Length: 133
Image 1 (tube, rainbow, N blue to C red):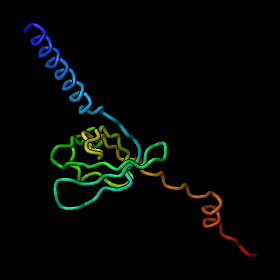
Image 2 (image 1 turned 180 degrees about the horizontal axis):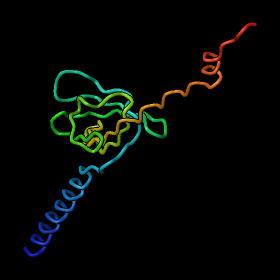
Image 3 (image 1 turned 180 degrees about the vertical axis):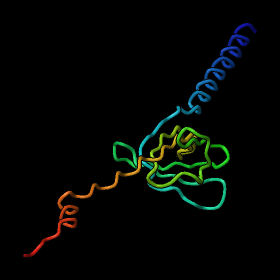
C-alpha cells in the first residue's frame, strides 16, 4: 500500500513538471525589429499586414491588429491607418502559430529631404547683362 501511494505521488509530480514545462514552452519571448516600413496592407478589417525592411536588409512580415496593437507616431498616440511606407518604425512583436504579431509600433516620420541649393553660376548668369557699344 505504501509503495502504491509513493508511486501515485511520483506520477502526479512528473505530470506537474511536464505540464509546467509545456506552459513555459508556450510562452513567447518578446522580439523587436526596427527599420523602414516597406508596405502596410490597406484592407478593410481589423487585421493588417505590415512589412518592415530592417536595418540589416531583411524583410519582416507582421500581423497588425488595428484594435489591439499600440501605435505611436512622432511620440503621439496614433492609429494604424496613419502609418505610411517610408516611415521609420520599431516594432515589438511575438510569434504565435508561426506568424509574427505586432504588439506595439513606435513610428517616426523621416525627416523631409532638404531642397537642393541653387547653383551660384546659374543665378549669376541670369542677372548679368551684356552691353554693346
